Image (tube, rainbow, N blue to C red; front, top):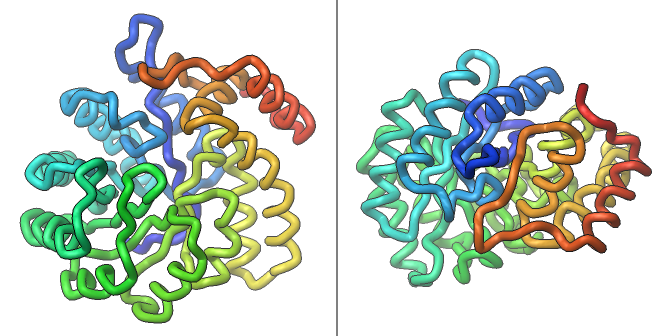
Length: 295
């Protein structure tokens, strides 16, 4: 499928007992569909994938694919720092109907560039599903280089990269080397407009959980070559995007969603409730921007 537009990195809502709030997932998806996002990404960093069991992970992917069919594109989270587990996650997502998966660079074990190449090569040749590489060195401790991505483009199933390195020079180099051979999606809300200008096609957005229509509008303005409108929307979004990263994501976005009447629930340890000072700062930003509770 063509990857272009606003993809919401959705949270995993938890019920009061700590289990997954399945109906909450569906309510959040309905909210996003109504506001025009292109697609969603379940079970990524924002979905607290690190503290989901594989059984829970698979169930979230099942629900999202089932509910979204014909309404939203889905890039299913299926990453691991264990290549065999990543392949198993990709197979399950494919079995559930996923056309595309998001696969994070292996975290903690910090592979070399050759190790990264072999990791993605194994996934791309083991499962008949398209792969978006997720580069977020601030979380994983490893950066995948433009040279390694260029090598990976020999495999037809490597179709995109979610770039959250914050390095615009690197992102420009990816596009210079690969052009339309690899779709670039912003992995950083605050840098979405600059990444679009460097050849990006869209964003995997945390902000779009609470203000999806504005993210959709900014990308649409850029894609119709209305740079003034795109810049104005970028600047309108910026305080909200910054506030959503006052603490480790998804702490702030879940705090905002609970305040706005969307389904989020608690966080799983070791993530914990937002500090009161940061929470008040976040809620003040939402109020200034007129982001109101969902009826």
